[in-house]
Length: 272
Image 1 (cartoon, one colour):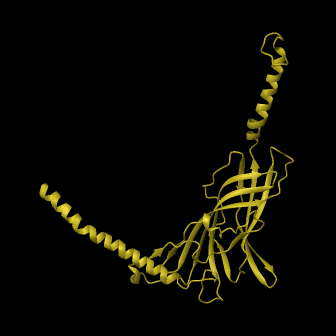
Image 2: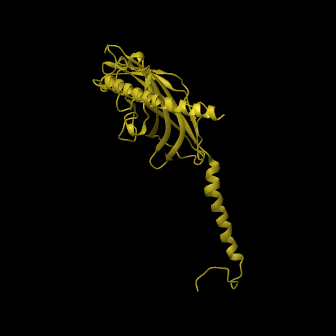
Image 3: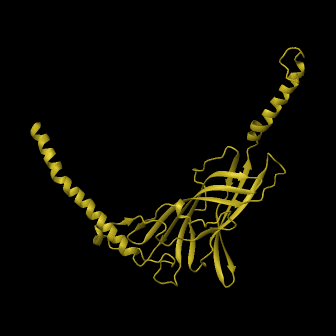
């Protein structure tokens, strides 16, 4: 038993330096690969060798929850997950030349990104340009790019409060690549559904999303594509009853009880 333990210690001591050597080589190869890929990379140009070809951007939109709804400002804030996939002709390599590295995770500020925009968004920033809120990309050796990011959508939505607290509101938000025409960037919806059972319901409002719609419109001499995000929001009247009406009625009854108390009981508040 002592001999077996000694052999294990010697084996570990012999192999440990080689383990760190492999890690160092892998790091150097990754650094070399990143340097070669991004040395002359221009993220402002569509990453296709033939600029007359369009880039197919496979898009998935998932609504997570309602963060805020302001009746005064007529705005709604939604938490959204957007997943996008496309092919980058400039980010390809031979894995055998770089220690069999098959994928890398560059930052979102290093590569070309689809300039997705929301018309009338109540923010200075485009949807996928605020790199402080996005995650790195996953790039495979064949140039396929996968990117998912959490996006906070803040946009105006007209609200009719006539039937408060049983009010219901309908909103339509157009999302599109305003910079590129349809022959430059083609939108492909992976799924028309924006809710796959992972939506977090709000205690005050209920969201009813509709299937996504892909539309094409003409502006000037070029065609553009737009994703139409449509949904309805309905208020839970129970929250209004519990938080406002019930306390108001309860306090009204307490005020009536004040007149039942004798004037000289000392329990009635009044001027002295």
